[in-house]
Image 1 (cartoon, one colour):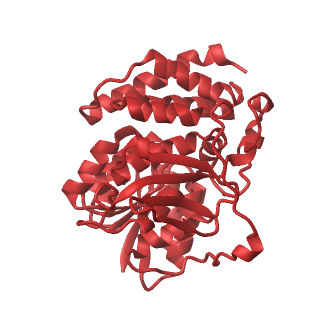
Image 2: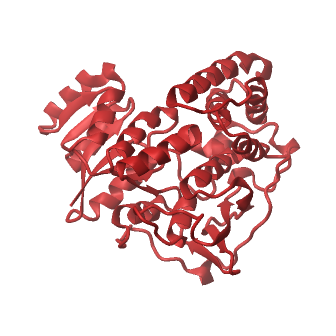
Image 3: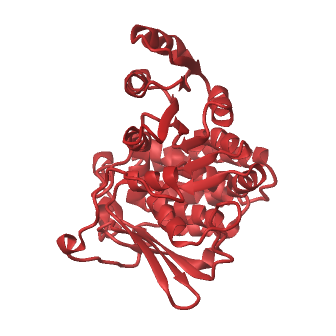
Length: 395
C-alpha cells in the first residue's frame, strides 16, 4: 500500500492524482493532502479521501480548517504552514509525494521529499528550473526515485531504460537527442502582430489540456516548453544542444527519444495527466488510470512543425538561460512568474511577458549557482527587478 502525500491537492494535477488514487484503494491511499489557501476545497477533498493529515499553507486559515474537519466528523489532523508541509513530505506519514505546488513555493517541500528518499512524482517545474542540480543531487544522496509527471518528461522516462537507483539517464543509454512536443497552445500558427491584443481569457483557454491559469499562460507563450527543456536537461542528463522542440497540436505524441543507432521511440496517448500519474504510482508496473486507449484511426492525423520563435520568444529565452547556466534559469523563472501574474491581472499585455523576462535577464547577468541560498537570492532579486519594471510594460 503506497501512502501518498498530494501537495497542491486542490489544483488540476492534485485533482487528477486523487482520481487515480481513488481507483486503487487496495494499492494507494492519500495520507496527506496539502493546499495553499482553498480551505473549502481542501475540506471537500478530506471528506472524500479521509487523509490522516491535511495542511493549509496559509497559517491564518488553520482555525477554519480545524473547525471544518471537526464539523465533518473526521479524525484528520489539521496543520498549517510551509514548514509543516515539508516535515510531512519528509516524514513517516507518506512514502510517495506528488509535488504539484505551483511556482517556487513548491521548492522546499520537493527538496525535503528528495532528501528523505521518497518516490517523488514531480510536477513542480520550478524545482528543477530554479535548483535542478541541487534537486538531482539531493535525490541521489537520499536514494529518492524521481518520476516526472509532466506528459513530455513521462514520455521520455518511459522510452529510456532504467539505470541503477531507479532513475532514468540519457547519457549512458545511447541517446542522440530528445524531442519535446508542444501543443502550441491556443495561438498556434498566429504571428506576432495577431498576439498583441490577446486577453487572459483567451490565453487560459487551452485547446487540449485542462490546467491552472499560470501553466495555461505559460503554454500560450511557449515558456512552459522552455521550462520543460531546462527540466529535461537536469532529469535525464542530456546537453542543451541535444534537446529539440516540435509543435504538435493534437497532443497525442508526448515526446520522442532518438538513439545513436537511428531508432526513435515515442510515447503516445490521450492528453490526460492521469496517464503519467498512474505511471508514477505503479512504475515499474502499470495500473489503470481511467484514461481510454488511443484510437489513431479516429484521430486521423499527426502534424508537426517548428516553433515560431519570433511570435513566441519565451522558448528562445529559456534555451539561452539554460546555456548561460548558473542563476540564469532561476532569474528566468522568477521574472516569468511576475510577468504572468501581471498579465492575468491585466496590468501588462501578452507580448509584454517575454519583453519583461528579457529585460530582467539582461539586467541581472548569471552568476555561479553554488548554493540554494544563492539561487533564492537570485530569485528574489529577479522578482524585485521585474516588479519595478512593470510600469514600463503597462498595458
